Picture (cartoon, helix red, strand yellow):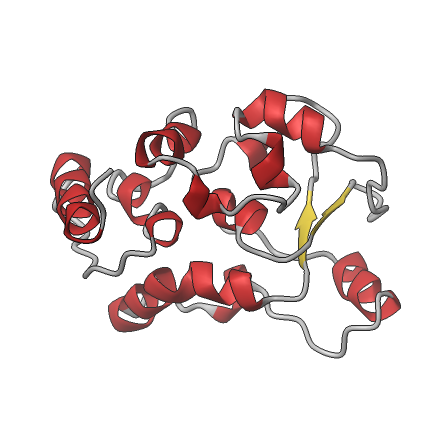
Length: 178
């Protein structure tokens, strides 16, 4: 499923003083395997370098909001310096949502508020954050975690989730003793 921004997204970015926006669902060509592989291996770093990530919660305020169950959205939540959650009317949710998000995702509040790094969490803990999330393609459950472990590896769609996870674990073991 591809998500496209509504006109309110750009208006909010302009109001917040940003001159440029980048929209992953519009700026990555999923039909080009080379572009898709580069994007997936770089995505976490792109979000990490972003000044702000806007998240459009089209079904807010439900606790089972679709955004909190999609595996790829972990990057949008954890990597940027700042994440702004916008409700269906493009209003920024100004109250502290860290407690709500913690209860939905089990991600520690300290990581959600950026007072601790994602990398301070154990490998098992980072894996657990994706355990209740879903992807369209089986292999994406492993590929969406590359940035959370600071790993890059070739994407092999068709290999199945078991092989993708084994390759991910092998790459993690090369750089960690956790």
